[in-house]
Amino acid sequence: MTNAALHDLAHDHLPAELARHWIGQLRPAAHLRKAEAGDPVVGQLGGLPRLPADVAWPVWEGRGPLRFVAAVDCAALPTGELDVPLPTEGQLAFFYYGDDDEDVDALVDTADPDTWAGARVLHLPPGSDDEPEHPAPAGLTPYPAVPLTARIGPSAPDTESPVLGGAELPDAFERALWDYESGTAHQIGGHAQSVQGAVEIVVAHGALGGGVAWEDPRVEEEARRWVLLAQFDSDEDAGMMWGDEGVLYWLIRPEDLAAGRFDRAMFTWQCG
Image 1 (tube, rainbow, N blue to C red):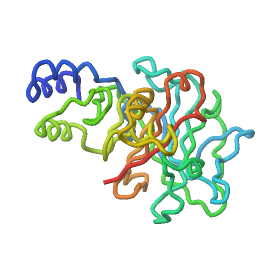
Image 2 (image 1 turned 90 degrees about the vertical axis):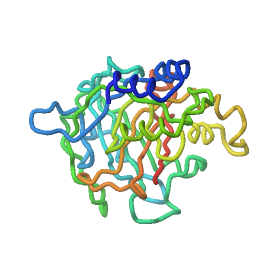
Image 3 (image 1 turned 60 degrees about the vertical axis):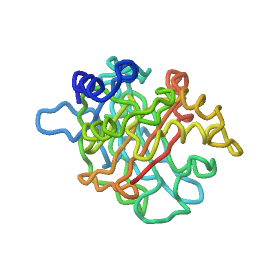
């Protein structure tokens, strides 16, 4: 998926003014995939995290320990090529309670703050990658470890993204775009590859709290304040299946990201 290919796609399917607007919304992202021999490794899916002695394994009180999903090395990522203020050192480690056990009462619901403890992102200090692997808590089986490499490439907004201002995109364009975005989609920064509608809207609705209608204009206004931090797709190599081939998403406001306030990141997930 290159900028040139997406520019051609837009000009082939969209009126000229809309094509220019859509192209103007493309954003760089670090697309993650399984590292092969010779690839620079920037992180891993699954396995065990390397936690400093003073950092506890995240737990959802009353439920149990979260499962380790992934970690990325900020110093190894090409952060300077992204348009979000990611840290340039240390590691970002992602944890999530849910799995394929069909325990619907233990699912993290963006609209229910009582469940938010079921997903965490930690910024671990420089040197943490030299720590020994932290043993998994009793009863928790780690996912198989998969090394990750990164490639900077464009990312396109969801067809319902608030950055499009309600512009109607032709079905033929949406189908063609889907062909470009198919496949396992692990990603840092850029636009989220949503499965069922713009995740920014979902997160904004949760952030505004109960009692706000979905059609309230404040939801779209709030959605514009959130950017994708990371998404992790279902992955056969790592033994990860989020619902029906779903995706996990962590979003954050840029000012919180710049301040290192990862405790303010919001989580949501979608599946087919």
